[in-house]
Length: 188
Length: 230
Length: 176
Image (cartoon, rainbow over all chains, first blue to last red; front, side, top):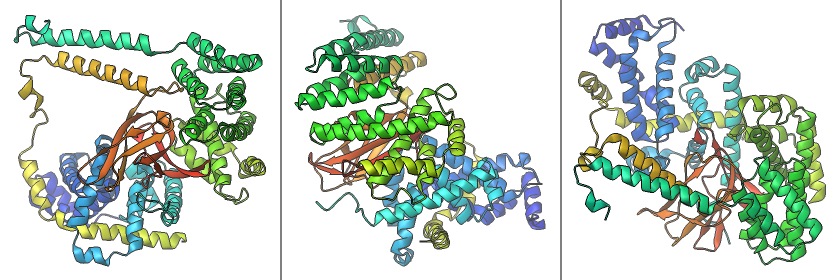
């Protein structure tokens, strides 16, 4: 898909230090970038932080962006790498603490509208390992094709297909098993 | 005493002394706490098991230590745990001989050792544990044979990796049967590869080889054997 | 559930999660522009300098490293494992059990001997353990008597007729 004329011009303006142009690009992409980070990092505070970092990093490296590539893929690559690094450094307890924050700060109407099944899927996805979760977020949230996902994550396309397949198997298994387990308690 | 003689503006000297103390204590602790192969031998000699049993257990565990599959310290602790378990002597001997024989056959024993320790922690009788060990040992042996036939050995890949793969495959097959799934369900290969993929000890190269050489049919064969035993 | 159903669920669930949190994005553009105008240098803060103004960096690091070695040796002494594997990094066992008075974890990595978790004010218990890459079976022991699986386990397996939890640790640390 060829880049829109207007997007190309925005990028050129941003390269010339036109901050309004960069602001417009951020407005266009912030939800997608945040969504990817949220799916991978599993908490909103980290995701927002990462989204900011992604735009800062992307701006600073804009001169290295190759016009032949899709801008979105390039931007998502920056985002995914930041997420990976953050996961490596993050203390594991952080996601769980923020889970409580998330529950509280969600829009109540939206929360009520979410079905039990959707909640289960979200929780199962959060528990999935990074290698499976990242491609799934990129595919089912950001709608990227296999080739783009492979480019963003820096692994071969075949591997992406395998991981998506396995990720789905894992999710199905987790959803099946959840029926038999309650949180922390078991019938004596 | 020492601290008083250091002036506060010689903070470097303070830290240097602290480092030296830490180093000395760390080294001393290591020397005092670690069991040696000799300790392991002595412990086995002191056990109330048959002489033939002692020979096998000694040979097996010492070979395991020398092959890098066990540490002397860990072997000592495990043997002591079994020796002091208060279990029937014959059952204790059965378990130890079983594990030692597995080591002598160049097969990893992580799964067996873990099952023994878990069984003791759960308060299970040693004869129940012994049966478990014997059954799983059979599976490990069959898996190891399969891998060797496929040319997957410590000569080509690391021993740690091959041992991990052997253990993981055996674990998947055991769990599959024990959780009531049918060996002919057609999912064994997928489950096996998923587990191997998640195990950080299995290198990419080893994983590729396993991925290319294992077949559903062969795994199902071993699973069927498990089903007939339990 | 077939693949199509799962994929639809995933899309909906992900969209929903983002929608519910999207308000945090308000003003993001300004926040980023602010930072691009006033970059913060990474060498700014060294909070430890407040307490040890006269300590030479090398000695401080050396002291910490050796203290860690000492602690490592002591912990190694309490949980000797038969297997010659290098300890890697901290993996956290964590569970929410506000009603429990005591929660411990037992597993392959500690000879199935109870290691106590610490409780926080929300009733969440946790413990960080050094684990080398591999596969570990374990369980939580509640109030000294009840063995429970971990709701956040990577996998569950049958052992002696009971259900054990499984944790996988890959070369980069915990699989997450």
